[in-house]
Image (cartoon, rainbow, N blue to C red; front, top):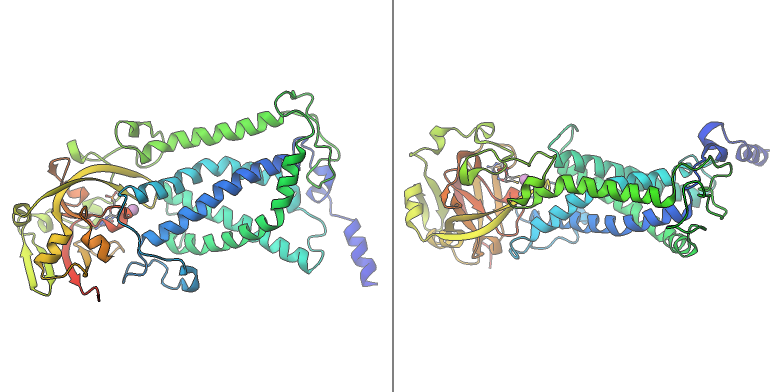
Length: 431
Ligand SMILES: Nc1nc2c(c(=O)[nH]1)N[C@H]1C(S)=C(S)[C@@H](COP(=O)(O)O)O[C@H]1N2
Ligand SMILES: [Mo]
């Protein structure tokens, strides 16, 4: 009895999208899906690797740095982020965000190409089938969640009611689970479909001659509509859309004058004058840093085994100055390289009575907000290029860029380059 009911249900899909006749595009089919899938296989692998690297770059093993302290086993791969080459995070994170933007049309086209699957009937057939459907839910749900939160973050739109890092981190692992499962199941199908081809010449078939792929698959329309685009047209449109999107963004990761290429995005313009005319997320005013706090009375508090010393900006300028070209590279993807001048952090360690095996804790005058305090690793504290910067491109850094002094750490995410430094504490590195 139960079996008969189930059989009847199987043979009677509800009307509309649950019926194969509903899906009529003649270009939809396993080959088109495999082409888009192979682009995503490569692209999303790069997204996963650069995303996981970004988490490692935050130095979450150091006290106070971890945005997801409950990561447990998911932090299995963490390692000490290197201090060179200085453009390391600029490249890994710029790639993560720029590629994410460029992949949007491919993701949408891929979802479109497999949409009949979403309405598969019956929805669950067996335990194995329901597991497959669950991987798909993790894959598609995780993918959309990561793309939406990531894009909003890169555009500084914090519309969501949760903390970006935590959500993007756990969402990534849900996605990775679905992605790995999906690739294991579908890789052979993808290779087979690519080998078989679309059944017609990709380059020479006109729109009018475009026919469904000659293969039995639930993606292929049984009652195709008249063609409105060729496969070449569809893939060309997707590829061109990706390039246009990439083109609007790419200036955000380049230095002047190529930076002017940025058409959209919050970091196309600077907000300052002369050497300080480059982008700022958080101005001194929004951070609650007032002119009284940064004026002549300001002192850097240097705390270490030798006790606490207070250094004025003049004191700092009287110490050995070093100049390096180093980027600010934000997790949001944008970056900009500048020539910074200031005191070597390693010199401050020594001055405070510390040893080369000690590390630093840097605090800002900014009250609260999560950026107020950062732990630097031993390598970061000792790196030849790690600076407490006082000048940029030969001019005093502006209040919005962290006057009187800010740290600049080679290869590190921008968040580790603390503006409006108040106190630097030497901490026993334990070695
Ligand atoms: N005190 C303080 N330092 C800070 C920040 C901040 O909000 N407050 N932002 C950090 C981040 S996330 C980046 S990417 C760089 C550049 O940020 P900006 O664009 O606000 O200058 O400074 C870092 N230093
Ligand atoms: Mo940032």
